[in-house]
Amino acid sequence: MLSLRGLSTRFGSNWVHKGVDLDIPPGEVVSLVGGSGSGKTTLLRQMVGLLTPTEGEVRVFDEPLFAGSRAEQRRRRRRFAMCFQGGALFSAFTVYENIAFPLREAGIATEAEIRELVALKLTMVELMPSHAALMPAELSGGMIKRVALARALALEPELLLLDEPTAGLDPTRSASFVALIRDLQQQLGLTVVLVTHDLDTLAALSSKVAVLAERRILAFDSLEAVMQIDHPFIQEFFLSERSSRALARAQGA
Amino acid sequence: MADATRTPELRFTEGCLTPAGDWTLLALGPHATRLRKELAAAKATRWDLSALTRLDSFGALLLWRAWGGCVPAGTVLPDEYATQFERFVAMDEAPVPHPPRFVFTDLLAGLGAAVLGLFSHLGDFLALIGRLALDCLHLLGQPRNWPLKEFSANLYKVGVKAMPVSALVGFLIGVVLSYLSALQLKAFGADIFIVNILGLGIIRELGPVLVSVLVAGRSGSAMTAQLGVMRVTEEVDALTVMGISNYIRLVLPKVMALSVAMPLLVLWTSAVALIGGMVSAELQLGLSYGFFLETLPKVVPVANLFIALGKGAVFGVLIALVACHFGLRVKPNTESLSANTTASVVTSITLVILVDAVFAIATRSIGVPL
Image (tube, rainbow over the protein chains, first blue to last red):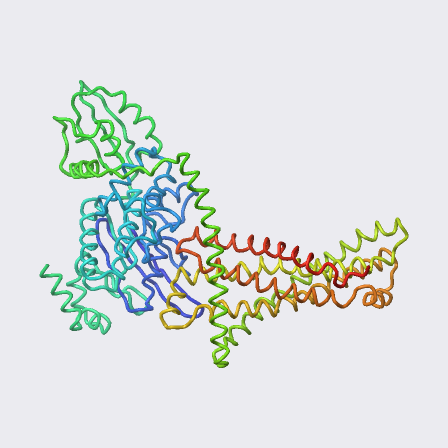
């Protein structure tokens, strides 16, 4: 689905990644974790082509990200979508226009169909139809995340990338947003890659965990298997008291 | 997943319609128009969805619309697609409201809003000046709190950094003005009056207005954008919460800097423009530099210089106040930021030219040799 081959990144004289290899199979929900400054967001931005790695390549759907003509690249880009940390909603558009925008750009659906598709996406992310007329500045943090998710889902992507999906949400909203993502992932058969700091999110969502440390992917396996690995970073990240509580909560739920 | 998409199609056999292939947004792209027509023309009693390889919400929507908003009885509907249509039922119960249509009364309301908007601008602008004045009075008692560092930084930004561009523009304008006037004056044999024309024209009128237009475009827009982004990122609110006056920290240094920098820039630009005119006059009319420099103070009374400096200071204050006024009105979206930055530049240039006309009337008997 998505694979990174020998990815290395250098900022100035500082190597952030050195030989990152990762193969994400279809249908998985992969959480990318790592200490702060380990370049998780950088890696995510490279996956969608916002940043170009110094060395190595990114392959999506078994093709290099930047292969082929403009039309082919555009076609490939439509098959994945990204939710940004702050939502990145177009602030000059209403919620409705934000979700309709990618559909209009694709130029396939008629205006009447777009209306119904937007209504559908709004119900999918559990928002009211009356929210459609609001401007992004009038939305709460949780609603911004939901609208961003609806916009990302507008073009029916097969692969969804989430940057800190629950950052800035209170625990209740965070839990309900995580449940929403999980439901949608199961219904739509999405492959999801997310970057998160939040252990509750990590435990509740991910089918696999990729640990980014020492400039490479230290481990890529299920949560239970990753936790068995004897490495200072993993021990500290997963086995501290705070982490154990979060993980216990997730198992109880 | 990278396997090629299967072309979506609609098969018709013995009164049974069978959509087949990938009915997804991506695959339907080139076929959507044809399939919409086929669906509209189809007269089927039974539907069979089991031949579909993939179905997403767009494909489901096409079918849903063809069915007229309900799943026909007797449809073969595999379980994995059933949820898609259940969502449509929920959606149809709560449709997205249409935005209200534009009618004549909206036009009237728009006009009213524009007029009221003008009053609100005037009110806010007055309030800005009032608050600034009050804060300045307050500061008189505490000389340590004057924002001198910000003032100095702003002075460098709006003054020193504007020198090259204003010199270039001034020089070229001087050359052009001198060249065009020289052509006319030569015809009358009144060559030496070039000094009067350039001296009065540039020092009294052109210099201050030219610099104002440049500074409004260069520094006024920057100030509005900066304050605007600070509002978007809530930095202005953060200052308020810390109990620090926005007007002292943000507005006052800008107003002070422009009121000091503008007269200096006017002086600098006028001087360079006169040099440009002088060079051109020498080339065009053979007027020597020495003669030009000697004649200038005789034909242009020194009062003109003070008028120019006064204008510069007033225009500077105006530009800074207008820029801050619009900057503080920015709402947290990109559209508002661009609208306010445009409005700031247009308003300050218009205001400068209006005030310049007032100056022209008020000083009509000062410094003009009769």
